[in-house]
Amino acid sequence: MSMRAETGRQADAEMLAVWAREVGFGEAALCGAEDFIAERDAVARGPEIAERRQLRFFPSEECPWVRSLAVMLWPYAPCALSGGNAVFVDSYYSASNAAYHAARELENRLLEKGVRAKTNVSFPAREAAVRAGLGVIGKNGMLIHPCFGTRTVIILMATDIPAPVERPEGGKSASCAACGRCAAACPAKAIDARGMSHPERCIRNFMMEGVVVPEALRPKMGMRLLGCDICQRVCPMQPQTPQRAGLGLELDDFLTADDAAFSAGVRRLAQEIGKNAARPQRVRAQAALLAGNRRREEDLPALRAWAQLPFEAVRVHAQWAIRQIEQKYVGKANGSCDGLDPIGKTD
Image 1: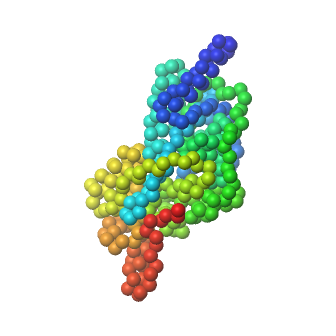
Image 2: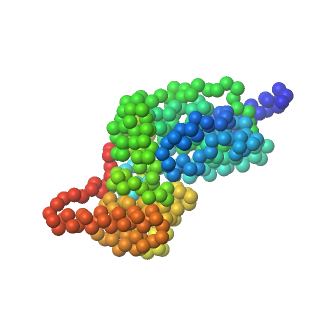
Image 3: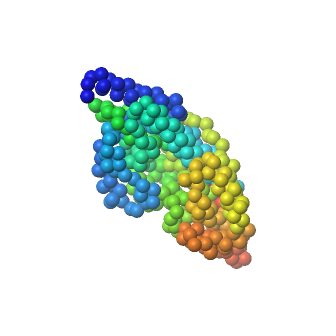
């Protein structure tokens, strides 16, 4: 390639970074498109996690023309915790929905400019961000950015823009304090001194994934419909950012045998987090678990109807919730007090 052509491609890289900010990303950088061999091997050695099924590890096989990966960070503010019957939906998911659409807009701009690009590719995102010099991976397994902390959505885009000649030093000024706060706060003990050593215990890895949640993890979810973020709330590397209000959704918006009312609740959720994240049967399965945690007798009719549905996660979770509620009222009749914390807060 001629010097002039290379100069033009460098301008493409600068243009991508500028346009990424224009559509709402906080920062964007390029990294090489080498295979993610270490990450593939780590996943192969680790436990089966539904979220990992979509991962790909060989960029050149997915996109033969790829020369770099654009790593784009979308920062977001934490969501305020609510009590009562409100369900918690981590603000990450609203941000992820916004970032997805912004990335599609950026992809179209680049294609119109003659740059080959394919966004929302499923390679190991945190590892790509480290390659791009955007941060380090903390003990909680999340990317820590020097300005945004751990609260970023990471979007990857394959491009035919040449990768930087020199690989950036991973992390810049970011670091993990290795303070142990995330390990101490994790309700399922998924984190230890080595880091995220037990992803099969992380409650987020089982939320609305269409799988039956291990019984030991179900009470730890409290009233969390989607997302946990406990390890992020205690992390000292977070910037001081005002909390955003919750979505205003309650468990009763979903926990109903009335299909029309249930669908209305799912539509409200999908408006915020996207239809792909708010799949009806996955929402129903998670709502059943939350009903088992708040243990309210009025929920039994809906749960008994759900316990007859053909979807395994919905059926199993509803049957479990029914047992929790029945045990509570049997316990009351016997004079015991064995109620769960209905809020599920740990901070």
